Amino acid sequence: MRTLEWEDNKLKLIDQTKLPDELTYVYCETYQEVITAIKDMIVRGAPAIGVSAAFGMALAELAGENMDDVAVEMKSARPTAVNLMWAVDRVMASENALEEALKMFQEDIDTNKAIGKYGSEIVDGGDTLLTHCNAGALACVDYGTALGVFRAAHEDGKKIKVICDETRPRGQGASLSVWEMQQENIPVKLIPDVASGYLMSKGLIDKVVIGADRVAHDGIANKIGSFMVALAAKRFDIPFYVAAPFSTFDKDISIFDTEIEERAAEEVTHYGGSRICPKGTEVINPAFDIVPKDLITGVITEKGIIDLNSIENFEDLF
Ligand code: MRU
Image (cartoon, rainbow, N blue to C red; front, side):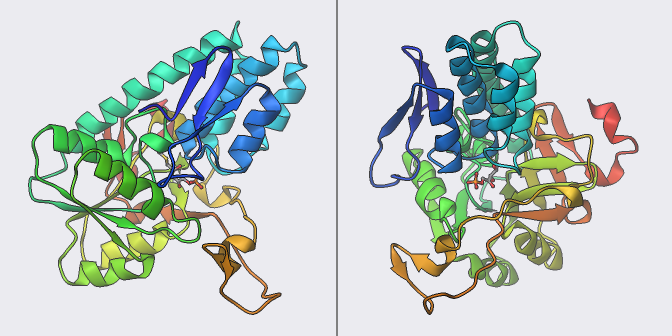
């Protein structure tokens, strides 16, 4: 399965807003269509956003657009996942946008497989592993980061069970992660977000593995709800891992300065198309969370597992 592909000079995307019921595709022929697909979350997940943006830049170059202007527009599609800025900057520094995008496409798959290889080492046969949101193949070109760890452990013959947080308000855990695990025949159960602390207290979770939209020297940003999961894991001494490629690393900022995307109120006021609160209710809807490094056991990267708490000079990693 490829979340995105370059086909006949178009960017082909799985329409993630239609999963799990329909596996359908959207074709982007202009860079503006790519920006819309990122904003509307037809494609979502940090690495998938990055590589899609690179192909969007390629469409702009082929159309003879002003690349400096397009770069600014493209970077503003969603603010939190640093892969978007990384991908646009990388294309801008290259000779040929399409060649660079195709390189990034293949690198993403190779990187995730390497993350899976290192990640499988922390998984024991019989583990029950909790994840939050979707850091799977659907969040990347293929294979996934957190779910790539589960895939690799499963391929290594380890008998694992996966628990997916539903991930309100948009439900990426329910609609995407559960679906991906079912495609792989990996045993999976869905829980409401509010249940993970209870399950941990009962000894029903061995490890947590999530993805990231940004990794900085002092912590990570990931889907809203990640902080509460990390706090609960700390309370019960459950290892809490983050799986992320170096394209998600940001050496320039403190994680607490990350711009957190605020999304539409309707994501919270409505469920399955129906309003669940009084008309006109005011909403706060931050899409991402910050997990400080002291709650993180390790960051599983394509180069190995990093303990942010014991690194003396973060910049040396680059
Ligand atoms: O809002 P989304 O669905 O783009 O958020 C996705 C996440 O938070 C993922 O966990 C993160 O991007 C890592 S994907 C490998």
